[in-house]
Image 1 (tube, helix red, strand yellow):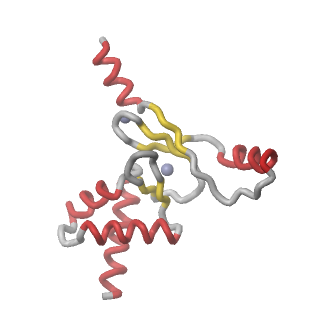
Image 2 (image 1 turned 120 degrees about the vertical axis):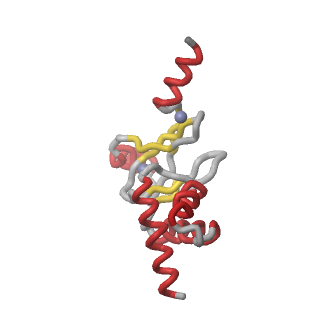
Length: 132
Ligand SMILES: [Zn+2]
Ligand SMILES: [Zn+2]
């Protein structure tokens, strides 16, 4: 049983790394089941939550939406597309904001949750085409 758990954990983690697209749990389930139909939805959910709790993956909470998961665990920000729900990395130094907060709030900052919302390049293009 232990061995099976380890194997399933590796499958889920490797799938998350290979997808590299900030997938939702359901998207990971679909991808895992493509190759390993015997791995249940509940198992994938359980393992994703474990990976997030142990710091091996990031859980990205989206306002009014399903959680997304990220195999990149270093601190970075995300932008969420209002149209298609896709999540992408924001290339912006994290330190500056944390430093700024530290200076102005007096709090010792241990974590943050910050979500940018917008329209991804693909959806902008679709919108343009629709408007044209
Ligand atoms: Zn989009
Ligand atoms: Zn990310």
